[in-house]
Length: 356
Picture 1: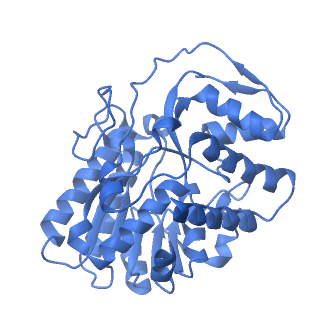
Picture 2: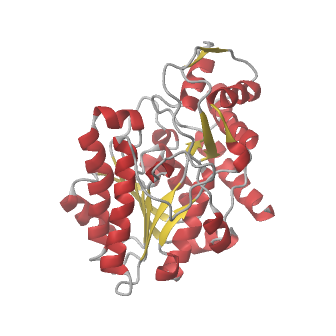
């Protein structure tokens, strides 16, 4: 990790979707390593938002731009001249994709096309990481983890938009970059990320924390749903390693990469909630039988990343939940500075990575 920190120091980095949960953690990590961080995104909700909790509005250079606005986006990128782009901007929720399918496809697919098309005319961008999702795979209920070469698909608008984004990234790389432009282009896939500071609607951890802070029972609609969970720092670590590798050897490392969770991190919604309550020190669960059909199980395998990037997940499920719970408890109950606890967790993670 010392090499990673040395590499990113003073590099110009653009993070699209910087005002989101994952983007905020990535910006914080980049700042901690001494990078010059620029961001684009929607105006964040000022009531409860990690971006403002971490005072990133004063620590990075942010431009409020809709990723679908090609001309404004191009103008900003040409002005900043970033060395590396992490493209996280997205409509991130399955449930919202049913309500706004057109927006979902426009943001996730056309937004990525805009980034790729702008980058192909730039000589200063040397590495681009496009973040998609493990839901890009055609989920047929395999009893093994999905690998990068498995068929893409998606029965809901969100999943389909991510599969389409994968095709777009591959097409642009093959058509305009491979053997022509010295810029690495990769798509990256991760699972259900958790971590401190997420206040999103219709997500398990934020719902749990809100109930605990109000001394209310935690209501679970689908307690038996089983998912692979991972702390947000796990895939972000992979993205940082890959971006560096691409920068140094663009075409050797371009392509699709999985950054999945530990096999032992596949647990039910109820189990995650029980762990949150255990580490919080109080709380009760109220649930009822599922009215919804259980989705086919989906997990990705990360053997490619382990072999070629020397990346691997460092947290088991208990550690991931404990670190998440600790963040909320320290910030919301103890009144600690969110920047301090965030940087502390990032530094502890990097130390832990060295040991592994």
